[in-house]
Length: 420
Image (tube, rainbow, N blue to C red; front, top):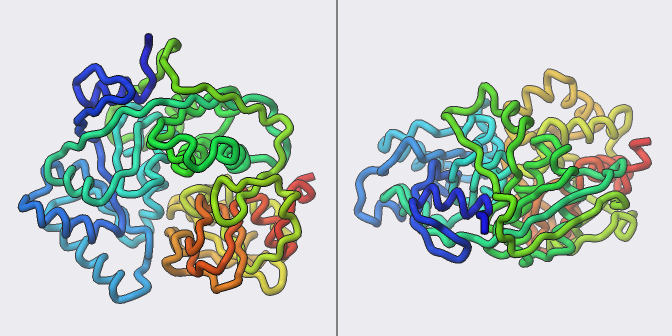
């Protein structure tokens, strides 16, 4: 019996013949943390270890509250800067115009590569699987342990293979497809499993769209998501990859926990209604729901192609009166490209407020949180109670096209009428 991608890479990184269910000790190629590094470094110092064992493997990105909105956040950033200098950590992305949201920055800066093992103190570390990496979220204390020892134990996950086929209808995007999948599998349907996205639809997707799939693998409970790397992947990585890499693929006779096929030929735009990501409905079931705010961006849908889709709908139109439209490009690289191409201008002319790249309201930290009783439609990945500030607010998740159309009408709107 052959091996899955996850079994093969964890065998390679542990030096043992690993199979699903086994516990292995691995040494990751990179370990990522963000603003939570302030808490992690305190745990690290309690371990009694003076120096990070492999500072070249640590990647720290400030992105959750940038610039800091309170004195406490500012102090955390100060502590992180001092720690980075003290430990000689060179892979540090501070608040400047070279960084952005961690899950966009790591691919852009050449860390997310085929065959690499990346662990991170953020659940959406699964994003890097779009490049053929094994990438998984871990806890803060686990990051401190890796800083101290360079190692961590993992259980080798079983794998669910998802095959996406059919002809993608107009107005349906990667976000709609992955919401549909989550709605069918459930928020806990892939708990501590690997999810492998395959099939002709995935093969046709851009790298940016594949990142939407692996980013939201976390919303099925998955330990990691994975898209087999191909020529699109290798082309995207040209000039970015900071080290050599070797792609790893599942064997044709790999032992999967399950193989699930989705034919998206008849799929319509999807929306995750409050207050769980698997509460997924066809958009017509919630169409007409009034909104107070629309959010375009985040690590899920803040890339150039997402902003371009929204701009095509909003160009020549205006955001509905009384509705706030916030745009968060995923990184400063995306921001620059959108600026050069005139995408941001179109969004500004429509009435959108362009924010600096960062997580902002997605986690309810600052720059656009909701008040009690307010309703938002967002391209983010979570809609739990309190996710964007108030526990009495409601969040609907949708594609950039659906968010843009909703901004025009001031209510949840099927984007297909604007794409004809």
